[in-house]
Length: 442
Image 1 (cartoon, rainbow, N blue to C red):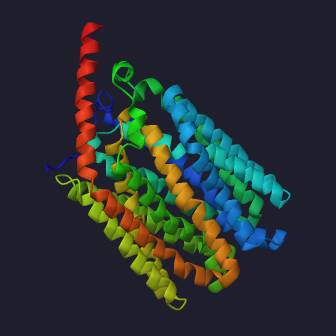
Image 2 (cartoon, one colour; image 1 turned 180 degrees about the vertical axis):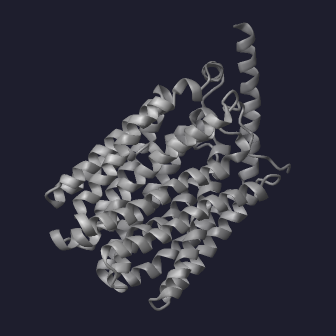
């Protein structure tokens, strides 16, 4: 079967957008994603403080983290669908304001219950940001850069986690845990004010493209069916979520692991955990670039790379958590997390290639739903429960095994990936013909 590139969309939505402006859009959207994850992950840096002040169990701490991911998983699809319909820039701005105000609410919480509901609202605000934000990013750049840009954009979550844990740990150490939350909130509010001033809907969605897309949808459309119409796209959702079970769990519990077993203070544990998270962010970018390069002429190579990333991270992290505490263990954890994050860009590119461009926001929302329900929400909570039974060090030895399941699902996706891409391209040719006919009549 002929190889397919990742440029099978009907319309190149980056046409007419200056490259300099595209990078400005990327920078500001990336900055808000950093704020998103700073607000989400600052909690992990203050776990020891909350545990001591409110006498919380690991299960309760895991729930404070998991509730955000759970709300992201439950709400990302409907909110992303609304954003696709009513304006992505307006939607992104509202989301940023909500999560920033909710983070400020965390700083003011006087009990576990108040903290829980504030974290609930953080999840509501952050629910669709990642999916809508990445749809904005891929719309302003050429299609052949998808895996690279997807990995680079999503790595903002890792860099935000780094800043959230490192700055949060330092602020908690010197000013108290409440100021850690407050600092993240003020940063998010500042960016939320700037974003709609610079990024305009009219500039990132030229009217010519929007008109043609709307007309074609009326006649041929049903692009929403592409969200679930192929086996390979369903496998991409599931495999990505399973792999994030591993990476997300290690990120959430690493500060506590360092505090308990290395005797590190809150600020030092946050700083060391931040280095580990930074390795994940670097892995997202570099592994995405590698994917774009080696799969340029053979799209199916994405599948093999994803499987290699899954199995490689399983091997390295399993060995790391079996080693005695020390520098060798930490170095191997960094390497394992670098590889574990490698599936993020390729999986996002697969979803973009297998779904219609008019519903990319909703497609990435579906991916986010799987990532959160299977990984980011489930992983920290289950690990917390297992930790209460057998200890966090023993629980960490079990976590990397989930990557084996992720590799198996990617293998299943590879059996139909090229055929599913070819089918979508064939449907796109028909839609493009209808669009051209409608434009000729107007």
